[in-house]
Image (tube, rainbow, N blue to C red; front, side, top):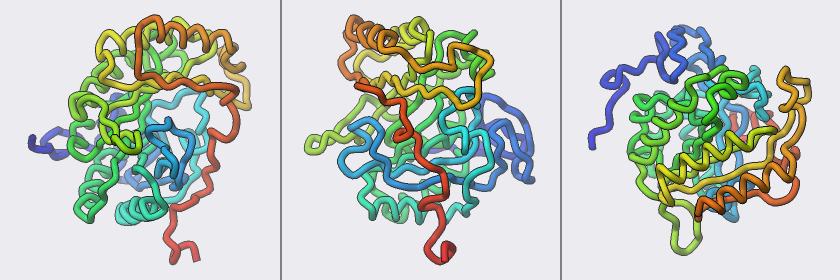
Length: 315
């Protein structure tokens, strides 16, 4: 299938319509959109990451590149330092290609693009260049799930694994927590496009690592069992066992109090066990769960520019 260009898909970072926000800001002239970023690539960290799901991190770790900014902007974001702030290092696209190969040399099982949505048109070109230069490990697109189908189409044949969140089936919660009342319908369409591109999950027979497919994450929120059940029911009913699912209990309350009181505490053991049992009752076979207390700082890396600059620039 022919990969469509930005022009053919009518995707622009000028009057920006890259994500469902369609804020129409001219990011090409240095203005920032809802994502808080222009078209200059800014990243907070590029390093091996051991805390993804086992089929992603494996023994060596996933080669994660954390992009600054975010088009969704959840009020409870655990990576607020880079998603809501100005932390990070500005780099050129060619430097990003070099980072991919440096992570591969360090033993990364894959290249994991974290919160990449607002840079997708640039990343499509970067990935083409990297693959032409011989990048042969899977590429992971790690996203909030709030994606435009037209923009995702730019990545067809370039992304091997999609790692989206599916945060809400409850439009009211989506509005309260992420100012995105349309999140459920947007995420449904985006997920369908991801599955269309990759097909069912494929694992490496020797290592158990994911080679292609979609792994959907759902972060359970306090008082969110009902919303979580609706998400899991949709995923099971729509995709059966063609996708993998990860049910996460690592919600970390922000340091400053939020206006929604329930978000100022962690998820209880009872809440999490209730949702996991629901997945079992649905007959979901390919599900990752988290055991013990995982809402701790080890899941929130520092964003001090590790791995971002070249050795020459660092000197």
